[in-house]
Amino acid sequence: MTVSASTLDLVSAHAAESRKARRISDAVVDALRDDGFFRHFTPASFGGREGTPQDFFIDQIAIAERDMSTAWALGIVAVHNYQIALMAPETQTEVFGAGPDAMISSSYNPAGAKVEQVEGGFLLSGRWGWSSGSLHCNWVLLGGIVAGEGHRTFLVPAGDYRIEDTWHTMGLQGTGSNDIVIDAPVFVPEHRTHKQMDGFNAVHHQSSPVYDLPWAQVFIRVVNTSAIGAVRHAVSLFRNRVGLSSTDMSKSATDPDVLERIARASNLAEESLTVMVSNFEAMEKAGWKPGLSDRVLYRYQASLVADRCIEAMDLLMDVAGGRSVYDGSDFQNLWHDVRMARAHVANNPVGFARNYASVLMGGENGDYFL
Image (cartoon, rainbow, N blue to C red; front, side, top):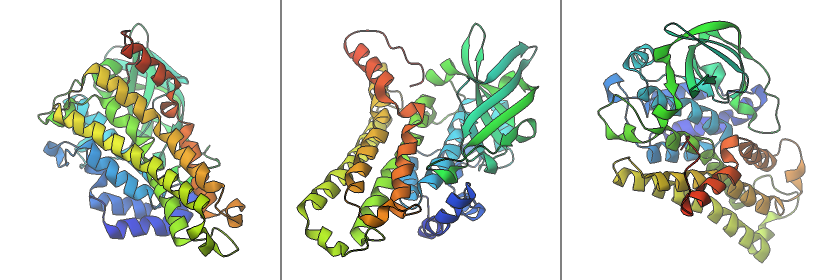
């Protein structure tokens, strides 16, 4: 593991503060930076680790066992360095030239974007939501549609956008997933853009084969894996019987219904982890070049994690005791956090199930973010 035990303890210590402030504590960000968490996907040529996805997500789960908001927001920030590694060498120098621990937020939904192609690049303006961890970042990756081409990602420096405080939510409050706003069009040079099909085809300029993995196979896991850690956290509350009831919780240790629910909930999380690690190990064995049918399957399996973790949390919520219904209870916070993860479009399995079934039946793939 990259993340130290002392940093994990710090995450726990600042979790309530981060939820109240609606942003991750600077002390936690600094500690994770010192541990090298943000440089996991940065190329070695810029002082990074060039690490594997499975190692990164095991770290993310460990963080989520202490605070899901921290794991969600800073996991998303850290994973963007993989996408930067796929972009033009000039862009990598701009971003990593100041150091390997680049801090970049994102919002890929192009619904509020206005894009105009001009000589040498694009004029970009609009509004984008759900930019997790943006208050800690000096760059943002924004989605937009280029006429006649399709989706691109645009890399914009902090001086060219503003952050609007909109993050008042029922869960994951600490992620600080505020809106990004560009009121007047800003110029984004061609080299600071990333075509969807370049991500799909894993076009890059690196020597390490780990960057042969299509970008989406890395990103799609970052918005659901933290839920696995949250379920583990919930199980630990039952194990330690912390703040769950005003009555004698020791009785739950012998209640067959409670025990069966704990087993099922824990297994749902651990199965999700096993599938994730197995998928990445299979991709590594394939030289980080999975076949299209495998990519479709892995995409569908990733989309199921949030639903399975919600099922796990619901199993436990029904027997969590009277104190769990009070605002601010640790268990209720976890229950809300996991449900919030399901709101992300990447965690809705319906379209991915349809695409997987279509490919299984001999049809054509219809998803180019996998």
